[in-house]
Length: 276
Image 1 (tube, rainbow, N blue to C red):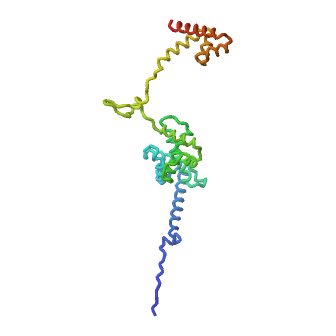
Image 2 (image 1 turned 45 degrees about the vertical axis):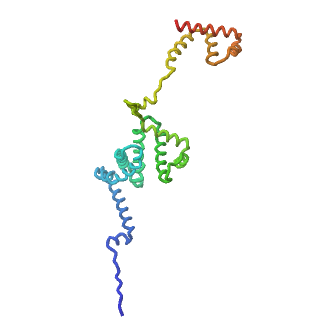
Image 3 (image 1 turned 90 degrees about the vertical axis):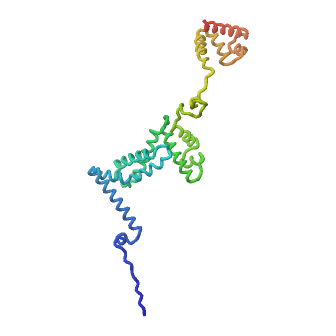
């Protein structure tokens, strides 16, 4: 009779230490990492250990770079955004209080994102835009990018409004404000003629046909102030309020013929004073 021998595989010493389960090692590694972070923060907080501070910053730089990449579509170079995010990380390391019981990443992420938003708010707008609209614009931009990925097409203003908890009017205002990020020079070329470039300023400017009336208007206003009060009133009713002579007569309590004479006399006085 053959005797079958069953070989029993013994767990490795490493596996035995982690409970014999593959996930046990990962949990132990995560616990060791958190313990290491706590030790580094303790060294930095209690003893001012600059080496511990540098190691913490170096350890979380990948997190800062990932957060910076979220804003890459805003027109800023990724290297610049990574520097801003790194500055936010340094502030997070310096401001973190381990005694509050929070994980460092829970404190670092909003700190770094706040630094990135502050960078966009303070340095990337070509013209002054109120802070509230700037922050609203960043939220709308993030929502549009997210929804475009989820839906496979550009979301409507109503969909964006539902996502960010704003009204449609606020979303539209934020979308219009995005144009303030960049401005175009009036000297930038937009086309060409036979021998020269046509600039943006050339396409926007036009001659004001009423410009020469400005000086005439100033002269008339000066002369009108010299007229008697009654004549000024009659001319105002006739030419400013566009009343007929009959309506003027009814309002002032004089005859229509008298109104006609007053208008004629007032216009003659204005002409003589202006020319003289």
